[in-house]
Length: 206
Image (cartoon, rainbow, N blue to C red):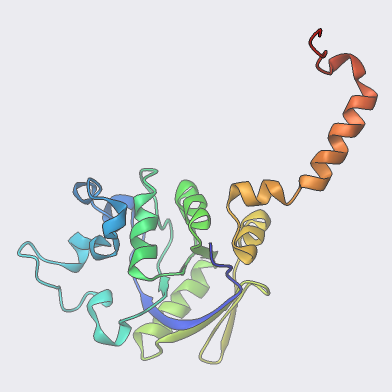
């Protein structure tokens, strides 16, 4: 994965609470191959009407938000089923960061494993950010090293699990994270052999 340190990008408001994974990508699109890209199906039933026409006042259909890499929502973002395809849809659409007061646990974990930053802010700060975006601001700066979001003349703090922060900063998946402890693991193996020789594997007879 690409390391995530800072991001200076367009931001789009999504002023809804409890946007769930079925809304992020409706189940009927999950039969398609990931190689086709899931971005076009992101929030499909919210972005388009029954005839497949864009809903003009939906935030992501605003030309001014085209190319946005930061999405700002309300509480309980990514609730619902554990489908990782919801994160694929966000990433394939171009988002690298979602800002919200709270996230579905599995959604947040899946996000980190796909290089998407789930930045948790207070409800008050989320409302302030949404208000700024809805009143003309369209860019934000996210700094994962300091855990800060800068927008207009405001600075907002966000929270993220320390191990998730480490993975994103380094562009690591779970295997990379484990490999980073290779020296510690090797020392433990040597120490354990000395402390518990009776637990070690007995060589096969020649």
